[in-house]
Amino acid sequence: MSEKSPLTLGTENVKTLLMRYAVPAIIAMTAASLYNMMDSIFIGHGVGALAIAGLAVTFPFINLAAAFGSLVGVGASTLVSVKMGQKDLKSAEAVLGNVLLLNTAIGLLFMTVCLIFLDPILYFFGASTDTLPYARDYMKVILYGNLITHIYMGLNEVMRASGYPQRAMAATLFAVAINGVLNALFIFVFGLGIQGAALGTICAQFLALLGVLYHFTRPDSYIRFQRGIFHLKWNIIGAMLAIGLSPFLMNLCNCLVVLLINNGLKDHGGDMYIGAYGINNRIVFLFVMIVMGFNQGMQPIAGYNYGAQQMGRVLQILKYTIFCGVTVTTFGFLICQLFPRTIIHLFTTEEELIGIAEHGMHLILLFFPLVGFQMVSSSFFQSIGMAGKAIFLSLTRQLIFLVPCLFFLPHFWGTNGVWLSIPIADAAACLTTGLMLSWQLKKFKTGRLNYAKDSVALQ
Image 1 (cartoon, helix red, strand yellow):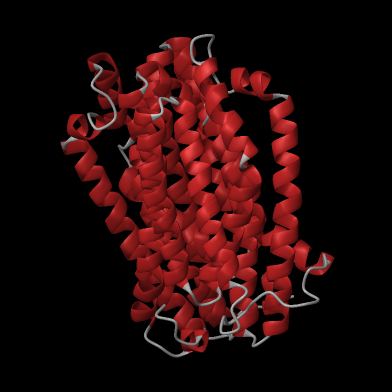
Image 2 (image 1 turned 90 degrees about the vertical axis):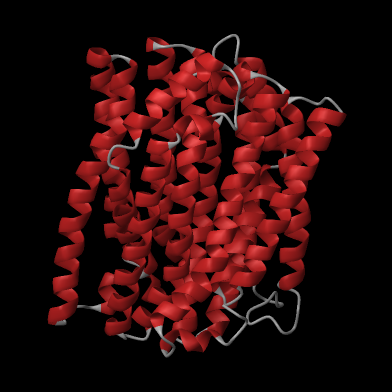
């Protein structure tokens, strides 16, 4: 949004609003994906193929950290946008203060516990004696900087939702650019190896955090740090956590899923298969993050208009965002199916690793076009504060469908069973989401909606 008043969320054309909010978010989310890809690319070419496998072992750890970050950040951003729709700026600023306090507490606790049990956790996530040293070196640095990551991500979410998507985007782009420069410097010049990639990430996030903190001290910011907002308020914390529980559980399930994938591939294939999954995961994640950018653009628009009880505009933004999400995942499907080796070659020149990754990519993306619909629809429920429905949909693909597939199919088809579990779960989750969304839309059209009951964010 080009720093106009957020009140235009209730009046301006929804397609124009989505582009204004989504384009900065897409750029930021794509940059965040490139952020992660750069680590893999620099590590693959600067350290080696086995180091890529070690990095892939850390993915469940990263998902676990992201789960706790989203528990606060996503819930806060939704609550802020809805409160602004209700013209309740005092409550929106109280949310801001509680975000900072809660992220600080969670970040410190997560860092402490994980550092104490680091090696056992990494073995549990699929590390072998060969990949453990790489995974440990990377995660030690990431965990020491975990507090910085939590605070930066949480406040950046609030800045975007409070009417400043360009500034949120600029902070992310700045962090990505600095990360690329520092990765090259630390790995190729100073020879810090995989630790250099992690150090570059934390340093970049710290510098970006300084800019975000400055934004919330400016008197012209729509909401900002004020005296009296830095007190824990349990009604605000409860609302944030209830809304944030959906992405929290989704990230937690991601952690479980990657854990099962890593261990399945290690048991039936070996470390190179884990490395191949790590490469494919980074590639697919790029397109997923673009859809998430559209979801972030939809969130304040849907939340504001739902709070203002303008259901026609809510339905318009949902339909248009679904179209955009499906377009992205269909494009990703075509690119990855037609040019897999070209893409994978960006990460490694190891032919064995390229061959394994190419085969896996063809299988895991079989129903990828459906993923755009499922992601947008699930995010829609979260955006309007319907935490229970969002939580259920976040669990369907990962926990209800994918986890059982990962337990059983590898016993029959080996590594192919691991790869095929992903598209099977995609198709089943899409069908479930379609049925639930259809039921909810009928409820909207008949006017059978109790805002106070159906939306945690409006309480």
